[in-house]
Image 1 (tube, rainbow, N blue to C red):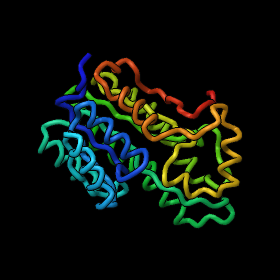
Image 2 (cartoon, rainbow, N blue to C red; image 1 turned 90 degrees about the vertical axis):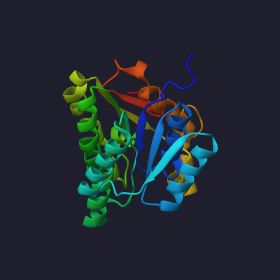
Image 3 (cartoon, rainbow, N blue to C red; image 1 turned 180 degrees about the vertical axis):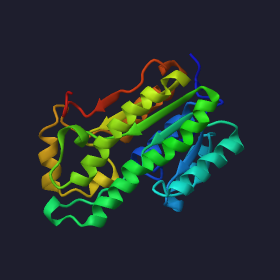
Image 4 (cartoon, rainbow, N blue to C red; image 1 turned 60 degrees about the vertical axis):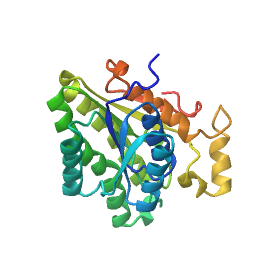
Length: 250
């Protein structure tokens, strides 16, 4: 078995300064890919780069805002020009601005949609142009279990994550003739800085609903993303793969 199946492949992972994004960047580098680590946190992003290089992997920091259309196009075009190709895009960048809808501020709605959903569109547009040109690509979108279950106090977040499923399926149909796959991964409750901020009572309430009886780990999400990024995963496209310990069975 080839220990570096992604050798010669170039990847862009958004929101990779911590949590799930960092774990994904580390996994892709472990599989042999050269990784562009995107995040607005320069210190966190560069720490991910350092961790990759510490394990003899290859990585660079790409500090653009995914919600800025032109910045995303310029950054991805620049990576394509420098590297010659971009084979893998992982749309992981996401934020929350939780509040029940009657009290939700318009800017909280707009900000979440701009980063989580429009940010994925921005990156997919830039990356798909390179992938279509080379007749090869893997686009992986990080959605969420709340896209399927809903979540009180998260109408903006749930709507953005549900929108990513529609984006995934439609783009998969468009790009399939060019040997470019597009899939979504929908994690449940994962141990990240985002979930650590949840009130303990709320956390226990969710855990009680999970048949596996625990939170998932960022590395478990990264394993699935790594599989979808492999050349051998070319017949899987337009799918939403669930990773939630049984919380949602589809």
